[in-house]
Image 1: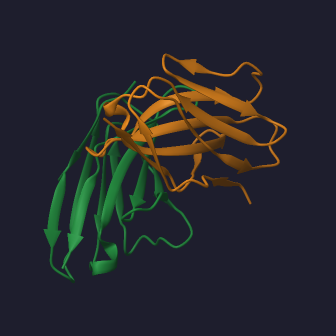
Image 2: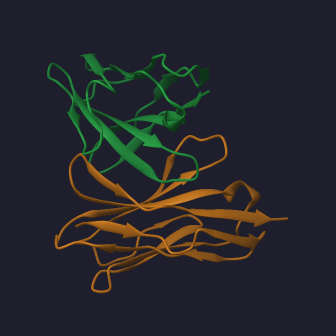
Length: 113
Length: 113
């Protein structure tokens, strides 16, 4: 199993600003995943972060908007840049442990005014 | 394209009754994993049950069981003796390989006292 801590748990931000979300895992993992969950919607994968290399972004997500850092095997950050109200979502960090099981952080609920 | 469909946006069930949540998926893969995840109002997503496609026996975890029909590409979740704590959003997910997960749109389940 894995215990994942995300910070902040929630924030209210002004349009045009940026926010960095931190994700800390209690064990070393190869890949970390960042998901977005818009209100009432399912989970959409933003990117996969591998330690020591650039993150791999899914279609519709770009590094300039969602820069990701992965400095070591237990930590990652996701920045939401130049925010607009459309970025209001829950952002979830997750890791895969063992064969085919994802563990999730509690999520970061972001509201952009 | 690989997709996961949950046709029931919302459901309700009386406490102590049984409820079944539906999920269908589309894939050309022969081996994969299927999951049901639960997201309570507190937001943290947790794994409820997992099924490996090559296993014919349906997975069971206490009050939770699945009906896996590989040929029909169907993967329903049955919750027996429903409890108030089962109130949550339930997501069906499909994983064709390591690090790849596809989520359905979710079913909001409310257990009524």
